[in-house]
Length: 395
Image (cartoon, rainbow, N blue to C red; front, side, top):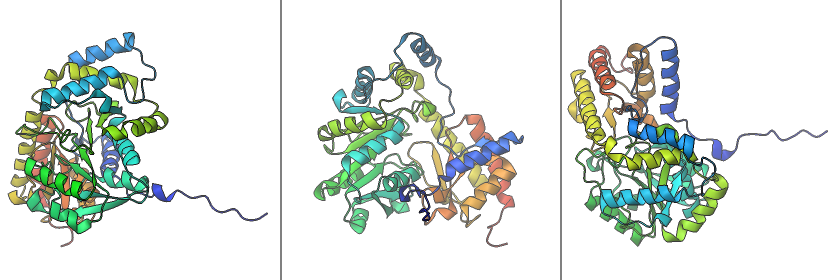
């Protein structure tokens, strides 16, 4: 009998690991062994679900239909999201252009599949959220890294786009992960104009809106007719495990995205949609969270500086809940550094190589989304531990 060809994993599945999740697994193992772990590795809000929202969700379990919904989500939730745009930004959005998705990740899958063909080039900032590159590559598109500069807040500029052209798509994030940096109106206008001139489709990630420390963020909905805009209930509203996001679509992509959603996801989870609607109904209960994150950021910054990190080695954040720091005074291997940090202090953080494979070996990202007590304790641990360290390649 002839020998069979060995069956292997697909080329599309050969993606880089998500180190933040590996750190979480290691942190959970430490906790199971009795270590008091301080979780600063994941962007997961530490605040609990407000009681008024919880009561509405419990009532939905007893009273609301929990089967399949329409593929793009319930009409009530899509209308509620449209109302949010009116309240937050003064922008009118047709609910028919809103797709409710299984997390922002589901929105990215639908957007990339609907807007681009295999082999097209999709650019994204580096450092940046690692799942952008993974999703682009897994969908048989070509990820194109834009090596951004500290001077622009590690955000891309029109000049950066010229260096990687030609491209077919551009993923932007404002505020960004891991830096928390914001694209101001001038920067957004310049990028949108460049993309329009070169027929480049923009996907804008706005999942940290509501968490800009100074407030006043603007959506690009209504500013670029062909753009796809993604948001989520995970960050401002803290509904991470409910896996609920949304996508604002151009008119021409509504039907293609609906057809894809019908087969890929059937519908978003019904109970999560009821939770999202409850969060929108009681969104005043979430007010003040960004102030907590801003204070947590400052607490952690102060702890790092007390530990010997130069103030100018810390990337100033405009929002979100991350602190990104250049720790080259202490390490040339951020993976090894984070392992040592967890093992010796119980502080879990994410190595910068997750976000920037070229320069991230000297950076570490800390999440300050946890409770104030968690962040304060972590800051104290870092302030005491860092002076005991020396660069690990110096012996």
